[in-house]
Image (cartoon, rainbow, N blue to C red; front, side, top):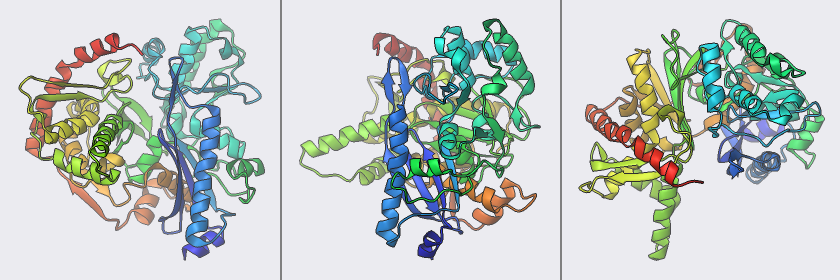
Length: 529
């Protein structure tokens, strides 16, 4: 059946640019992944900016697709020549300004940068709306405040997903969820907040730039709307071999938050998800607006424009990966060969044998700044009391707590706000080992956490589902109903309620963590990059 799906060009392609991997997947009419490909990459820290080069972005796209294509040939004996729909997703936010010839004016400034505090504070005050440092408009206004020469030449400002979509389709559009990470969205109109657009134009009017904000932003589309088709140039860019046919429809490009919501069926009010990879963020679809502005909580939207409370943290699993790499290197020195997957599984399970409060160990996994805890930069740091029980179980539990601690600090605000949450879905690498990351997240956020059998599929699968929705939706059919009735009905899942002892232990750990934040600030000052 999969051979026929591919041969007849009925497979749907989803591609997502994650922070460490560009993943491509093909899905069939039953929403199953039938082939995949990937390209590993890492951001660079150049001249004080976290970035990916243009060359790395384009070559990474082509490499990921080429890997998918090679896997199709290897597994099915078929050359991939035609697809029925295509969707592009990527890390949200950041800064990609182009001139009138679509030349990138400055290197891509990613979501990981915390260099826009002045702009963030001023825009939050202007809009009475939390404007995080990583949002595109914060980057734009900071460039204006810095008197950067390139700003006058901007003719288009978009996200990474929006740029790749343009290269493949020629359309300057963006899905509403990704657009909500550029600047605030009015959920009633599913477009940029008109009053805030006007306020920003008035704010920068003395600069006399030859553009207005709406002139340079991508048009906003909701899930299911027409976002163009794959052009001949786009097909050649994606597949330089020339085998891929042009003409398939493309769905609105989305951010990783929107694809995470889609991939976990958490697009209805009172549901949410936590994506845990290099970064970690929670997305709770709000039943009603928050009572006030919280700098720790971002308000973004679902792929159809419903308000979502988001707690975003820049660091999650990178420190765990570094420590496990160290352990594997030690094993090699001792003459032992190890399998990475088995090492992760065994150490994660060992963490559940640790003391509930980690026995006096506190870990900061801060590879970058964390606005939720007020840090512009970060330094990975392990701290312990002299009498701490320093063993593998406590150490690993502290590592997993560290991946969740900043998220927990933000989610406590939602708990105090009495935000209604029926179910939270976990997805990403942190949840691969059953009964570990899931259970500790439940303790962190005081809510049940569910992991579905598709939890490992991630955003590439999510954007493929959005491409499928745009291709197959019936008139008047909502995204919520489509996902529930056609994709997730009957899907296997496992749920975990918070264990009271884990909750109490994590709360005790958090008391120590919060008290150690001044030490983290001192480490940033003492260890200059």
